[in-house]
Length: 154
Image 1 (cartoon, helix red, strand yellow):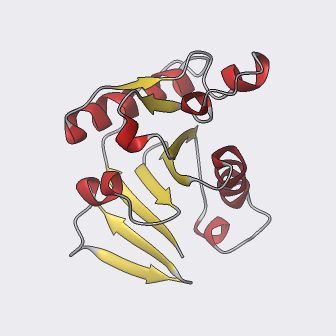
Image 2: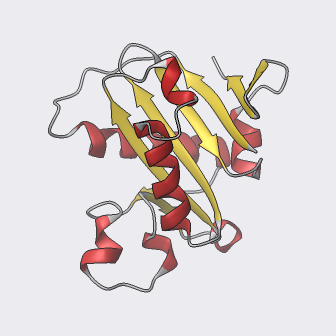
């Protein structure tokens, strides 16, 4: 089962060239605030591990922490102009492409995918309810759609 959560309705105006980097920094800052430990944006994002032949698992995703408690969680971020409701049910959509990327980059570990959709908010999809996910969601605000659980955060 995958979980999809809405984190916030806040929208930030960002230059399109830097929107991915800015979103990754925003998520790292959010996780730092919520978890009480420092999260960082991976240098050159997920490409760092690929381009530098790094075997360091911290660099498998877009966000990492030095805290060993969370070494087995890969965090990916995507920022896009739009996502249609139909994408949630179409296995060939960009939404499911992002999920496949998160699964691949996680190499069997737990993964969390943060998605920012322009004028819609920030959403979180994850492989299972990790401690990070539980701290970000309100379990009383949920909707079940096609075996995915959607949680509205704010």
